[in-house]
Image 1 (cartoon, rainbow, N blue to C red):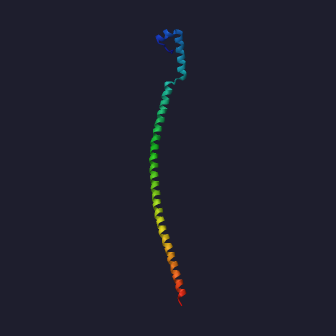
Image 2 (spheres, rainbow, N blue to C red):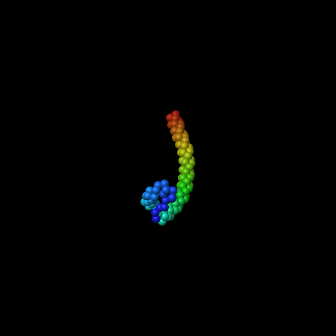
Image 3 (cartoon, rainbow, N blue to C red):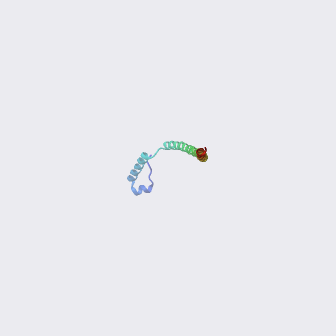
Length: 121
């Protein structure tokens, strides 16, 4: 079906130029346009893709929430470990002080006993 040019265009261009313009427009549209059925198929596929993308967004939000919970749990465990290390450090410090004190007391006791034994008849 040839394109029907408006009367003003036919008068301005002439019948032959209007017919050529119409033919050229028909060819251009036929080469570059998408048929309605194909366009509807593309739209249907795009709707499926859009639905899938929406599902992916929901899954991504859920994954981010789970990762946030996991990060909080890991941080809580590290905080517990840090508290235990602090407690262990304090205990080791106390034990080291006791050990140094005990060695000093034993050294003093041995020195006193040796001194007493040298001066006793």
